[in-house]
Length: 291
Image 1 (cartoon, one colour):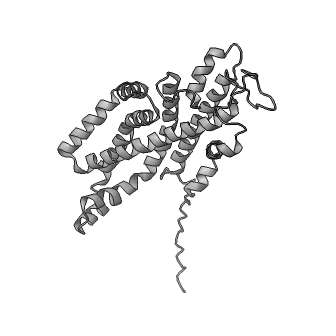
Image 2 (cartoon, rainbow, N blue to C red):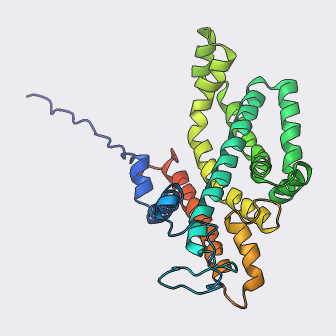
Image 3 (cartoon, rainbow, N blue to C red):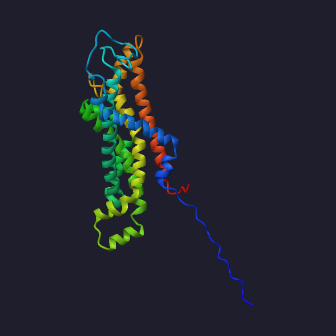
């Protein structure tokens, strides 16, 4: 009589969904991406889609409300608000994204070098990062603008500097936990140099976190840039910029609220969309999630 065959228990592991699939299943991420796509396309195609030039004045139609000829109304000089909003998106995106990329680049390099070498190098870099973190972001930006002066380039530098500590501390912590991993030891034993170990074998495992933090840092950069321009320390009139438009329009709120309302809403929804996208990326790239 033959023995009954033994049935092996089959273990079915949950299947991890693709990060992109999880990202696009988030309705807030989709909404934020659609809005940001519209803003970016409008900024890129501004000369094509704008009904007027940003400095075109119609002094017979000053501070008017929305109309067929001026869809969002006009400002105190009769300039079309929709046109100035579209051109202002260029300044906001360049300064917000550019400053974040610059701050991330410097912060990542400092964090990698600090965490990988340790010792005196780590002590010096950590001291610099901790010193910068003693100041609130906007206050540090104001201090830097006070030293460098106002202007588009200096605003970009100021916002980038206050973002360096965020990326520096993040990458330093990741490098400290990764530099002793087996694959790094194997690369070191195989003769890989320090730069290859840092930027190929260690840093590549931090990119998802850096991307998420960078996306979440963009709203702060946009709001800081708008605040500096609102205070007259950033981009100044007549250059169309959302923060300076709000600053100028507050003097005419009794006659027309459009010059404050529309650029204010543009700042709000742009920052909010980046927040939605950053939160969704954080969930989508979380290695512990399996849905």
